[in-house]
Image 1: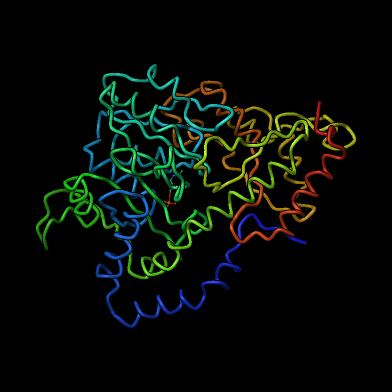
Image 2: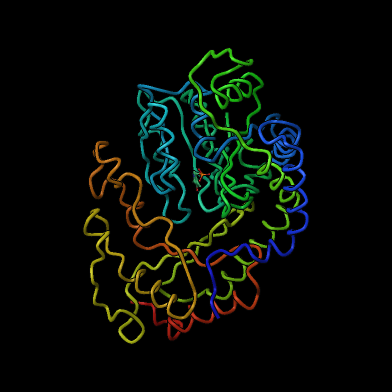
Length: 401
Ligand SMILES: *Cc1c(COP(=O)(O)O)cnc(C)c1O
């Protein structure tokens, strides 16, 4: 039995006809850019997030860029965020001319360490960009209080967290702006690229809408240098069919996460992710393998340095790499989110972060492994994952040092 990290076939089987009808309707309408299908999805999405406005755009990356630009962040400004994220988080900050300033994460949550934000604030700091990584919400009450005390804007990176909430309120409704991705593997995925910005403020919404269409408040009048970044009608049609299913999909992710947590509990050396407060949407189920498996079960305690750790000055990842390889040989396919932290990427060499400057982030990149989790993952396939992980552990204690 092969278990993939992500698979759309079952969802296509369930929704195939509705999706095909929706796409054909757009195709036959001839209205591909702008129009009622998009406006209607934007309204549905704003309602789901609980904001007055949602503006569709090309991608989650563009959503971040548009939100930053819309809020007036640019050259000379600093934005505090986390380096344990997908590259686009920081790339968007740089794209508007601002500088990403990375704060280390908490080991137990994988999220920005709120206790370290104040030390990173300088007179140039304009905003903080929390990332609800893997679908786990950042404590938005505490973050909001820090931001308010220092007069900082808050731009939420909700790319992995559609359907996530903090204290019962959806993410994307807490900050000045929320940025979502509809990349196919996200909680709400389109049939291609897509994204959206959510916000409360009407003026900000109008500014973002203009920026997304060449800085053009009305036809052929350009008041700013913008982008060509629109959500197209085909994607809006697909997303409108899928959005009503989001709550049940998130619920299924929660069940899968809970099953993993129960069935894999007690394997020493395998650290399970915390569920945290309610509201986690489990876009990923990310375990950690901090130590070498025992001699009989694993790499024999002989660490062969990976080329990444040598090249990018990162901690040894051989224990995790061994488990990943062994799982793959047994048909269980996993992914590493993310093997190299943003601050150690060659593209950011000029920011001057040395090895060890964000020690928890760096260690996590050497230890994390994402087990298969998606709403259509069958109970049988999940049991197979559990069985193989347990087998590789040999006995319950085999992963222990
Ligand atoms: C996916 C992702 C993005 C970018 O979204 P795209 O739609 O792929 O451009 C940004 N931030 C995070 C944390 C992501 O996971």
